[in-house]
Image (cartoon, rainbow, N blue to C red; front, top):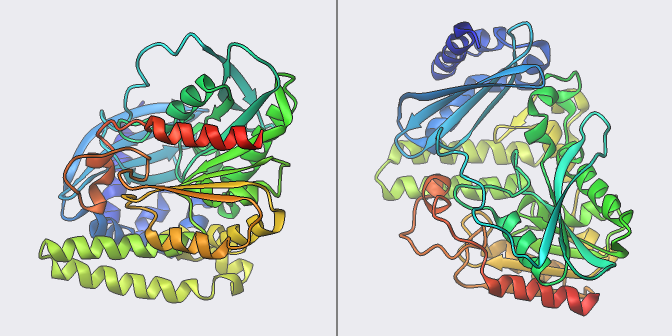
Length: 433
């Protein structure tokens, strides 16, 4: 990859640091300029609020995907490292930009080690809800039996691989292997935004990207894929959603005739409400560290964004295309605002197993209590919480860390999902199968 693209990425970082949105947008293609608009100028302030003092750029990695060239630069902040991922089209224009927690060299952990049990077997598969975006996946099956009850695993937010790899953890491979050993078929797959992120960001319709394209349509296609497999009992395909996937489980059920839902660390609230809480927790962490200036900035930011959120559903198409909320496109959030996940569960009446770790730092007791309130009267719902487990359903025993260091510290500790959780899921599935 030519040196000029690395220098362009560095120059983009400098424009972001200086709040120079005009020059930053001038480096981008038309779709990116339309998607980001004026929000680009305030991006760096949000990063500093989360990461702390900027200490400089670190390692750089380059790659190519689907004809796009990608430059990743580690941005070192006092509280946490971030990775700036800049995607270039064939003309050298910026066609995608993402900034997420992580450290180059450590951001992608090794795959799960060791052979799988000889009682199960795995097959590479591929399916698609959109022929432009075929998704590779892994179907894990018990070696004996037929007409299996099956589970589709649906990721949380962000570009995730089939194992939902986060730090040193691979919760989806944990689930697939352990549940297959207990007699169930499990399908996990690469998320569309991981496989085709550059292509999506460069597309003419990128500004109108929604949760349908990111998650729901592909999850529904995965359900249908299993229903057409002769080894699977077509009326016994369940959706297991983690985090954002759990929040969307009942919405996925409007697009595919699944048998029921397993919701792990999901929420009945709106995404922007969760992000509000997370920002306020960051402010509280900074206050405890004596950073009064940062706490006032975050609090003011949260108040302003929350006021904007109150009018989300009333935004016109033009307004939604040219507005952001907590750094996320208003078009994307406006559609999410119309999805009432608890109401959908009540409407379809399908069986629901709700699981939550009481040490979860991303979904809270508020959400757990609201689930119980909103699903009161549901014909078939079970609630199960685990006092020692976190958002990944891992038993993290280290010292508590600030929210901004969850990925780099808490999730960097390997904490596989305990057998207790696997047993609870398996018992619920057997009761319904």
